[in-house]
Length: 229
Ligand code: C8R
Image 1 (tube, rainbow, N blue to C red):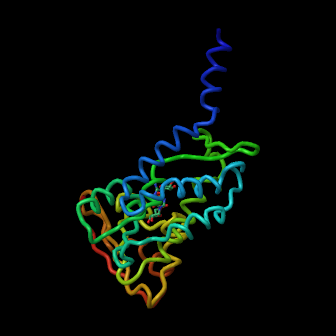
Image 2: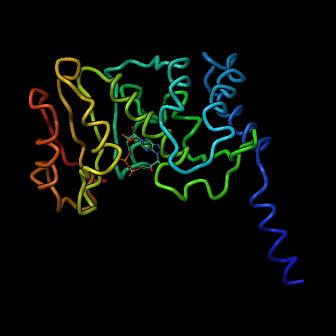
Image 3: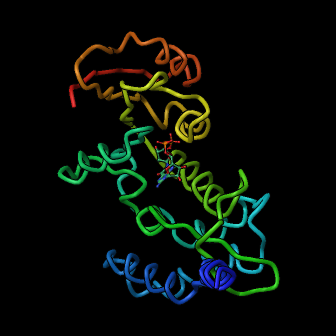
């Protein structure tokens, strides 16, 4: 009985979840009327990236076709980045159409909150134990997507940072290690930090914003406002 109690749930966890994953993917893809006719094609291109591959040392280049075939179509000057403020930034941008986050774009919206991976010798999607290695199909997707999103941005960009953590700007985050480094003058003219705090005891003089200034292209103006949550 003990063996059954262990083996059966494990077998369920390790079995392919292709149909379930596809249903979720299609549903989220349909939310974009302008591309809803192409969802099957988008799904196929997406699956080609990881089908038959193991999760570890997964190359971000695997998603090259996905981004070539589905370029961004939003206004590049509305770009809103974030780090450590995922829920807050989406509450903020939901009500405003002058800002767009990666999750407001087709691929970012579909992949947000999903986990997926393949396995050698199968043409299936698995959804458990996919993120055990540093570079896995999920992290590789966000590496590629954040680089594409930042490369596409233009004009006056914004970023919402968390004033309640020790490093509101963390050079090892996706924002700090990928997006900031892709912002180049004159395509991007300024970056405005929205530093969110709970009780105003953190402000824009925070040392971690100096680190941001030092990494950002010197010709790009850096502005900052601290706001109370
Ligand atoms: N970006 C990165 N990671 C994202 C993401 C996204 O749009 N969307 C989701 N769901 N994730 P963090 P960060 C997941 O540490 O590292 C882009 C990934 O699984 O708070 O600076 C976006 O454009 C990832 O592991 O922030 C944004 O500007 C965590 O959420 C930065 O990069 C990352 O959350 C945010 O990445």
